[in-house]
Amino acid sequence: MILAVSLGIAVGHALHYTWRFRREWRRRRDAAAAMLTAHATTGRACVFTTLVIVSGFWVLCLSEFLPTAYFGGLIGVTMLGAALADLVLFPMLLVWLYRPSRTARGAAGR
Image (tube, rainbow, N blue to C red):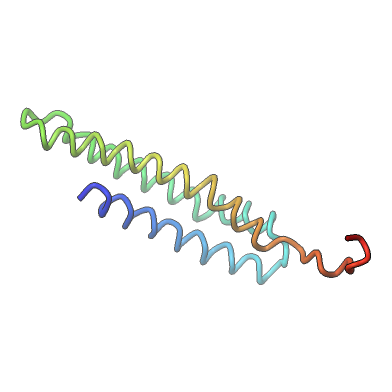
């Protein structure tokens, strides 16, 4: 259940980030600028959403029923890891995928 909850929210953040990144990339054709704009808009919303969700789940740690307390703590830690991946690793992957084509230089350099 921990995986289902955290994966669902992480995929939602990645979809929103991808949509904003692609929109900005089509407008500017610059992956770095698109990433910065996506970070400033969608990335900021993802951070606040994650903080609210994590704090809500960490309230479960106050439960005296240990399975509920562990569930809340593990979901919180997993969500922080997912947010870190969504806001650090995923943008790096997008910039790498949208880098300028190296085929324009020709095959003579190989």
